Amino acid sequence: MALGGTLAWPQFALAQQAGRTYRVGWLSSQSRTEPYNTAFEQRLRELGFAEGRNLVIEFRTAQGRVERLPELAADLARRNCDVLLAPETEANLAAIKQASRDTPIVMVAIDYDPVATGHIASLVRPGGRITGMTHLQSELPAKRVELLKELLPSARRFAVLADSANTGQLASAEAGARRLGVELQVLEFKRAPYDYDSAFAEAVRGKAQALLALGSANFVPARRQITELALKHRLPSMFHHVGASRVAVRSAGRGERAANGRLATAHPLWGMGGRASPARASVGVQASPYGAPGTPACPSPASWSGVYAIAPAPRNASSLARS
Image (cartoon, rainbow, N blue to C red):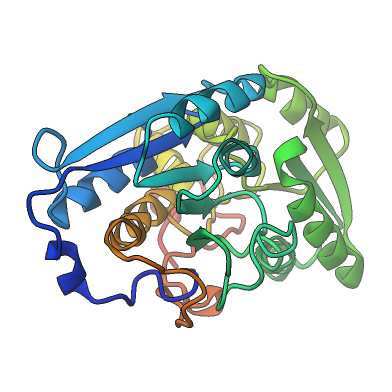
């Protein structure tokens, strides 16, 4: 969902200051080559912003080390950027807010709810100097538990992959599970590097009947490992983003024996990265973009067509069909 009309500002504004070079400060927890990061840059090019012509990107990555974020954010704050980009984790946004004073911030809230955590006033009128995108994490985890239960009506115990970045999501999932009488086996990672093999082994020992992976930018680099472990253990699974399902479908296409379930997701992460670019472009040329009322720039979760069904399936790759 786009916040407060970030995508509704006039497109002609992009050409208002021809000849000017814009500077973007970008704080990430992961590599610049991750799909959602490259989607952001691709969309900027489509909007007429290109490095070497009218754009300078100051990219900084903590490479999964949260303790480095304040230092990197402070460095970006000294670069006189026109706008600061804080994708992925809440820690990225918090570091950028703390280090800067007046520079507009575009967030991509992947694993937290920016309203519940107090970063913005509301989705329609965010207020202050922050705008951007959110994955509606206060609502979706409970809905995913509900979808799992609908697809696996006899299941009573779900394993949940979680870490410190998604405590709000976990609370939502737990609330949904209580309403449905489902027990959650929480597999919470405390420190990097995450031991996914041990987590899945624990899920199997705990007789989990399905798996829900909450949204975390820390899970993205391991998406292949996570999905292949789910296939290996024949654990019907629901993932936060479409990339995990695509990995699973490719694995099934290679004829791996364990591809015996449909995997599901709710939204493509790289689509969110691309959608953040118009927000950045607009912030860069508008004097006061904040608080403007707007409408959602993407459909509500109930109408997303990118949802993959999760259910037990026959032993063939064709069972991983899009619902």
